[in-house]
Length: 210
Image (cartoon, rainbow, N blue to C red; front, side, top):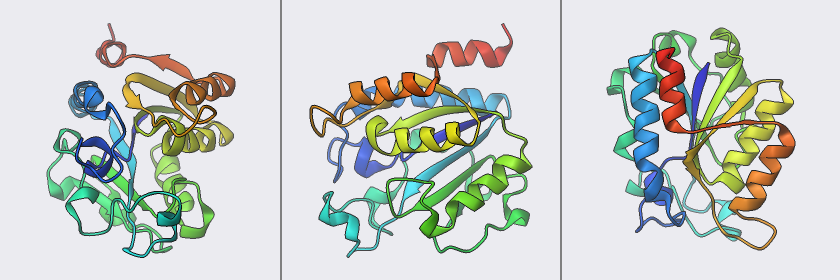
């Protein structure tokens, strides 16, 4: 099993972030609990981080956000459960990841330039699959933002590849984009995909074996 941490970066999570997800600050406590539980139980944390150049085409659709080397691109501190030597960020260069570096890391993050981690243009699906297979992953516990954009895209990819997805409901948050694209429509899609819904408390209890 892994925890999959989707885009918990300052531009999304902080009220003054460039593409703030309304209410994201309310899930920080649950995210912190999930991360602490993972740390205590030696559960690998894998995730994604947006990494955009200043002139990214995505900014034609969304406001500029998570530009490389800006404060907004940084992850919120509550998600960083390991020191720097045990956190590996895989660049979205299309190159393969370094398994020598990845081995022994407690957190591995894959940079992405589009909302979908499974976008084949950037090489990350193969990198992600390499780690998942190496760790013999079957169950994925999902946290992060935004539920109706990057989170649901990641979930669809995991389900398509036959992983069992568990959504930690108090550790995800969505954007209201339209009547047909919001937190509720994301939940409906998750139900269609057959995901399991649990809370951060239930995740903690499960990991304790109680």
